[in-house]
Length: 292
Length: 327
Image 1 (tube, each protein chain N blue to C red):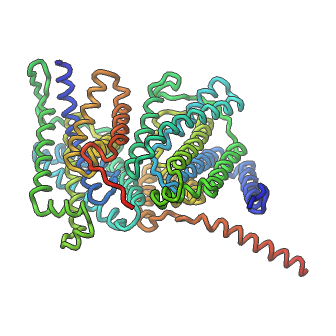
Image 2 (image 1 turned 30 degrees about the horizontal axis):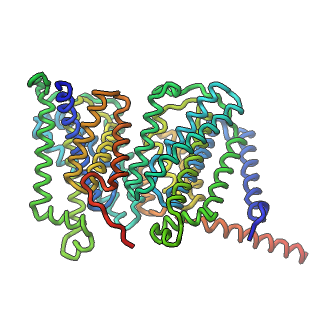
Image 3 (image 1 turned 90 degrees about the vertical axis):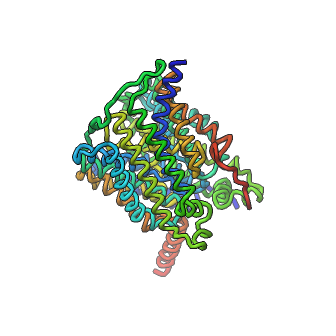
């Protein structure tokens, strides 16, 4: 039981990182039906900006988090304007390849500027260990968990309660109809990229603190996992991404805790395939009827 | 109308193939293509096979697969394991056969349920399949885990590589132009409509998928014997994406485009080699630029012009014949 609860804690903290990245994937997919392969790299960029703001500008954690999110959001907007906007009308696979191109570009430009070496992230948070009933929780895990939950709450608030959130939801349902209703679709898409990138950046800085290292290729594997998480929960659905992220994190830690670390990814993918076969639109997705 | 195997078109292709073969053989003998360039030449051949085979799945049948490298790794590992025991051409043949059988079984089992999925869901499911294959290979003892298999005997030479490449392209072209291929194209255009016309969509989708997987396995075997070392990480999602880039870059549905894209990317690789780190940045920018300015790929669906090239040739022949008769 104690082991179980310990794994639960570990799973939830890594799961909240996946969930934060998955949110960006799912929002962008929900609006322009693009699998944004470069999203994992926005998370890497976030980690690097976080590193710079903590080491060079000596910002405290909270300010570093905010400034990183703002800067990464700006980068996300620039990328969207330059690379994706001209492709609005072209095929989706062309947009997908562009996203892959952007991903390569970000990885290599960062390794060119910062060098390919692995940086150590300074410990900006004092790492205290709490023992509750035999379960060890360190303060970093708590910060990660609380920050992610707060950000998800904020996102849900923006999407459900504000005017711009309503515009986003309407664009996701029907772009043309939204445009006819006076919604500025381009602004909405740009804003979606900004929000998605800033969430990924938050995940990046949190991971930097948790694992202490940053490198140019760190975005790839978590990006893929987060995408799997988004599909798992039903891509395009915001609560689905959160559930997916936590599920993937939990599955991963439980498989490596009780079984073999080597097979954790395989189990994640097998469950993903099973879910897709049984319920192709994901856990929370609605089944669409085929129409001729 | 039944066509004989040696009709004018096929003979013309054969002549082109033989000419290409001897030109490159001459360049190799003349040391214009040194061993360093030969690596790229083999890379081009292997990725042309992979590109063409993935194009059958994505471009012709319209089924988005992101797990192609998985089948390539099956072929590569089967060949490598057998070659370690029998380091000669018999070993290569047996290894290829083993790879083909395993790929057939795996792709068939995978295709049956997953091809029910559509679009991005299929992409992510096949991505998962590719990763599962990689992880299984990573954890098996016969494949030597993460360190991979090294010192694989180098058996491949230009004639062998060329024969396999040409065979793969010819088979794919035949597949595309056959009744099966036309059924596949109709599935890509409109699955519901083709089903209403009496096409067994599942059967053709599975056929195309298995066909692509078999060719990928051959390409994998060639890869194993031309690069000495194979590791599980070589066949990850990055490699599947590389193959996808070739397909989209050349034009989806255009087999010519895939071959062309493999050649172009191979040459770009060589030209940019001295730039080291900048190489990938330029490559990425080129990829983005091409997709923005030419989203249908370099050749689009340019295949038709191949046959018009034949027509052109036929015209030319008739023209020259007429000229001779006049003279």
